[in-house]
View 1 (cartoon, rainbow, N blue to C red):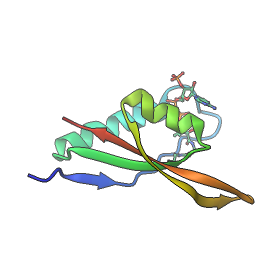
View 2: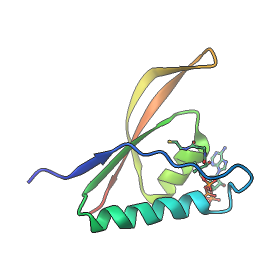
View 3: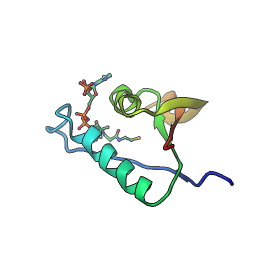
View 4: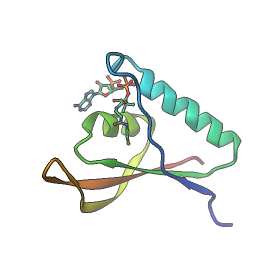
Amino acid sequence: MRARQVQGGSEDSKVGFRDVGIGTEMMRTLIKQVCFMGLKVLTLSVFESNKRTIHVYESIGFVQTGRVQRKFLREGEYVDEVIMTLLLE
Ligand SMILES: CC(C)(COP(=O)(O)OP(=O)(O)OC[C@H]1O[C@@H](n2cnc3c(N)ncnc32)[C@H](O)[C@@H]1OP(=O)(O)O)[C@@H](O)C(=O)NCCC(=O)NCCS
């Protein structure tokens, strides 16, 4: 049977309330919900320059499973897209 999969996701905790655990908790809550829904694989992508977010996702268990080099042009600089995956079983 093919894994049920969801792709996407963007989370945003309020500026001034970062680095106190809110983003990690939001992701943990989301993951509990998608487990109830029966999803087996979560895939998301993030700018490679977004080190805080990559740290949060890796601390939850996501692993880097791909990279699209120079995917985005941001403020005159090319930025890679990092693909991250979490297996839920
Ligand atoms: C991504 C985001 C939701 C994280 O939320 P948060 O509430 O700050 O997350 P937490 O407080 O749970 O965790 C932050 C972690 O990043 C770490 N961190 C902070 N700056 C970092 C950096 N430059 N490099 C690596 N790790 C960093 C903190 O130490 C903390 O880790 P720890 O829990 O192991 O100490 C928040 O930064 C945000 O809203 N960013 C803007 C939107 C965004 O980029 N969304 C993701 C799009 S894919």
